[in-house]
Image (tube, rainbow, N blue to C red):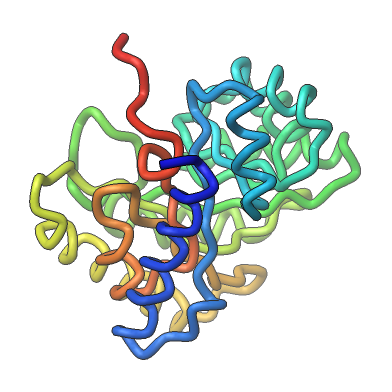
Length: 230
């Protein structure tokens, strides 16, 4: 199948999942994950209607962003080191993976220098996996309270990456937990925080994520095909 056909197929599955859950399909947006994908194939996705692209590495993304002349919104979705915050704030329109106050402060300072307000999401480690980044448990509330007062960034929601399961249904409890955490945070009414977004779900489980409340799904291989082996 062509990339355009893959995009259409993914969007149809997204719409069906939203309808099953009684949600408005327009409330769920696609972030096409273009890690390791060349600019030509990214261009095909853009021509097929993709308007948000997700990247995991600042250096790799910079070349693509400059080549694509910023025709779309670029979302940083990988682990971001504090020393890359300045470049990330300059290159990206969103950062999904803020997992510490130090990183939030660096992004805040960098965004101010760029005369922009950068939308960010707090990454939550619901699976308690040592190999994955993210705030845990009550840390999320403390982090949000501190981040919400920082200039230059706007806290817009939460992001998670559950453990990988062969059966997508096994991801459901993690997606549900993120939605419930977001609802609990909203009830606390933290000044300066506007938690409208849940970034969750990838190629193997995005339909389950949508059924549980995802507003941003990060889909790569279902659009661009398998990534090359390392």
